[in-house]
View 1: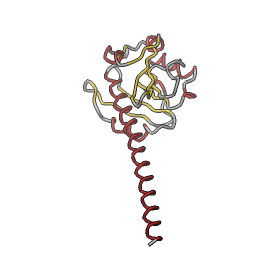
View 2: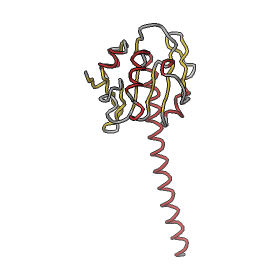
View 3: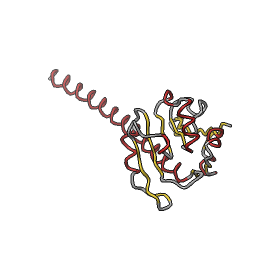
View 4: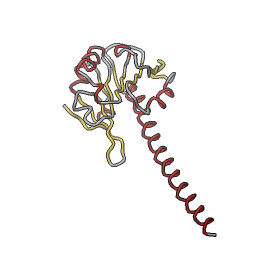
Amino acid sequence: MRVFLYTLLSLCVWLSAAAGAAAESAAGDREFQLKTAYLFHFAELTRWPEARPIVICLRGASPLRKFLPVLEGQTIDGAPVRVAIEANAGIGSCSILFLAENGLLTTDVAEQARAGHVLLVGDSDGFAAAGGMVQFSLRDNKLKLVVNLAPVKSAHLTLSSKLLRMAELIE
């Protein structure tokens, strides 16, 4: 009987740990699904100086790699959205570039984005303050946006007032 109780207790502990890990994974998945949806909406709510295909690019290791392909082929104003998650995608071919790590936001990348009219998005702490354009920030279990207007204007991009109303602004 004692062995049975020990086995049952062990099984309960294991199942509870597995359920906790699954719930944590599902919460993480929801976060990155939401970020993917936001990236699509950023494409809808951003105006570039010239008409161009919408290409959403990813640099760095991020769980977004799993979710971004769902945007491939969606349309904005009748134009198909493309997704580029290869490491060698040129910045100039991107409309939106998601940088998964703060270290990827270099002066050279920021300058290429400015010159190529590319919206730089990231989710690292301090991304917007370091010269990024739009930062995802998790506060109180809610996804918040921080927009640094100076690099946005410097890249000759126009963000919709709908997007700006949802964000904390840095000038």
